Length: 93
Image (cartoon, helix red, strand yellow):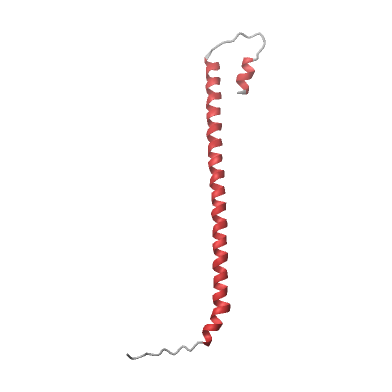
């Protein structure tokens, strides 16, 4: 784009439409399309990152809940279970 602007602003040069001019205009168009495509991909990547961060937070919360449940089972309930009689009894009917 800079080369095209420089070429257009040359002093004492008539405006011309030669192959070089056409190619520079095409190149500017291609670069603009590429920039738009890259910006769209960047937005998609940023959206994916946000979704991954939300998923990570959810998984960390689930893990915290499960760790707390394991703590309760091991520290609170296991002691109570040890006091219950463990001999199985068969009741005849």
